[in-house]
Image 1 (cartoon, rainbow, N blue to C red):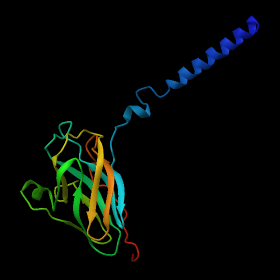
Image 2: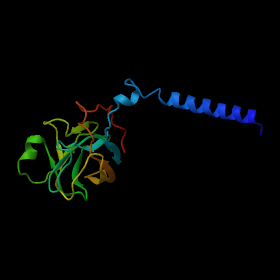
Image 3: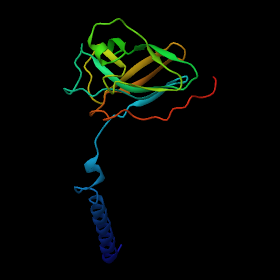
Length: 189
C-alpha cells in the first residue's frame, strides 16, 4: 500500500470518527429528550379470565424502601369484563406474611378481619389511588422492598380463578390521578 493511499484511509477514518462524535453529542444538551425522562415503573397487566388487572404495582415508598416487617400498599385497576359480579377473595406473595383487603384507607388503619372485595360487572375499580378507594396491603413484609424490585404475586377471584405474575415497586410517586380505562362488558362467557 502506498503512503498516499494510507494517508487517504487515515483521513477517511478520522473524518468518520469525527462525524460519529459530533452526532453522538447532538442529544447531550440541556434540551435533550433524555434530560427530561423520569424513571417510573408504570405497573403490569394480567388477566384472570374476564378479570383484567391493570397498572399493578407497589406504591412508591416514602423513605426510600419498605422495611422488613412493615406494610406496603398496592395500586391497580381491576376491570370486570364479564356479565356477573366477582369477588377478589385472596392475594398472596412470598414477600409478605399476610395480604389484607380493605374497603377504604380508613379501614386499613383499624384492626380488621380479612375480607373480600366485590367487582361489579362491566366496571373498572381503582384500588389504592385515593383514600375512598379499596386498599390491598402487603403486611408483615418478609424482606426489605426497594424501588424497581420485582416479585411474584397471586390474585384469586371467586369465579374467575387465579392468576400469578410479577409486579414491582414504583420508583417515583404514582400518577396524580387514577388511570382511565374504556370499559364495556363482553357477551356472555
